[in-house]
Length: 382
Image (cartoon, rainbow, N blue to C red):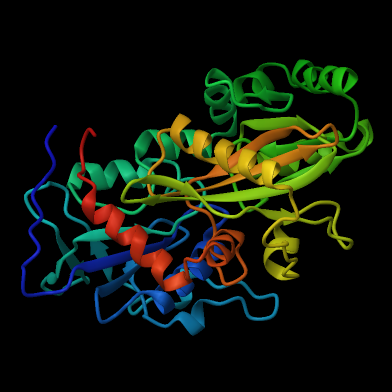
């Protein structure tokens, strides 16, 4: 399929629709990320249209007000608090013939908001980061920031992510998967599958949703007594769950960014143990602002190795735009890839922008490079 020709008028700035919020349990973090992007994007270079997706899936116009999108104390923001109308909605184009966005309200004539040249989707989790939104934008012929349909889906589903990595010879730790049908058909057999996995690889285990992020729904299980509660917590976020053995070692992260000549890796970061938390969970990341070490205190060889693995993971999953790759550096000196995030957090304390800042790419330049990469890239098969 050939790319669609841009309809952008030469006498206006490219219009960027920042789409955020969404139906996943990571709704609030998406709002925080959107606030950071809106604050950083160059308004002399781009026109910006903030579009929120409510928790029930309604697309709405929102206030262009980054201050209202931040975490206040322990209160998380929501798209519902930013909407300009309780009844209005936004309609994206559904064919490549037009990139016109339309705003509708009950009893009113639909209002054209102008054409969108590129979408910056800062959604996290299902219904946004998993290929669903990317497929919609492909159908509409609208360029967008970040991974395409396949890479987004692979990056969201931790089971198939690991399968892809293994097929490319990348190092992956032991894991087990419990699918919804297994649990529904025979919960006792599914539970025994986990217990047998623990018998082979030892306690503690991590029980997590297979298709969630921001450390949502993850429980560290020290023994069999905590297993049922951990399974229930993971299933609150996803009926498919993943079980992983504990890898003893250091947590290392590395960012990948698409440049004109291909993907490059940032300096890596280290996530040190968090004394108030069992592991680097949601509250440690976003509420208590636990901070990583940038750059990670690694040898030159270790730094080079993790950067090579990060780029290899980016290529293995057919990623575009950006990725944050998370690793364990085990006690025997080997790197094991834990996961990738195809739309990592962009909050002010997020590791991805911090790593690139230390590498020499400041936040506004990072946003600009992502938008420019999306504008260069055609929609359709590529």
